[in-house]
Image 1 (tube, rainbow, N blue to C red):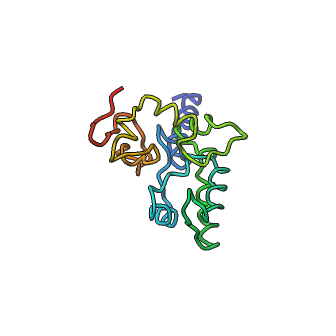
Image 2: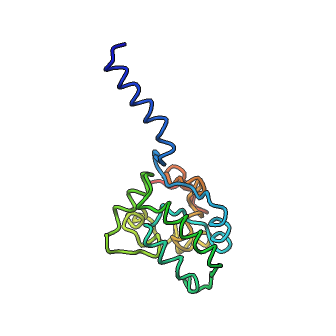
Length: 173
């Protein structure tokens, strides 16, 4: 094997070895890996992956837990710091996962969405849904209940082929 081919093989091999450590993913968002984050958030709702919003959104959301969408979700100062650190380090604007990158690109630099459903990417991906799929579906009720339809959400996967709408079955375009 000549030196040029050896160099290419070395570069490709190194990229394949390093890619998982860099957070590169074929699709989806990074799953939640922080126990404190998972436990605190899932006490009331699904623990949304930080890769679904930019760091500035998580900072604003988490620093206002006294009025978290009408609920008091305050935690200790130590826990708050740990939650902010985890969420911002794994946010859409720091992630290399494809869906996180797309979400981040759909948000203006001066925008700080506080709801995942307010991002341009999420609005676009859900544009075909009708009342019977969400609001008129007693098992779904709102777009914020991602886990109602996305069967592999805990893995960070939101692929269309994995969507099952309660009472209606598999999502078909």
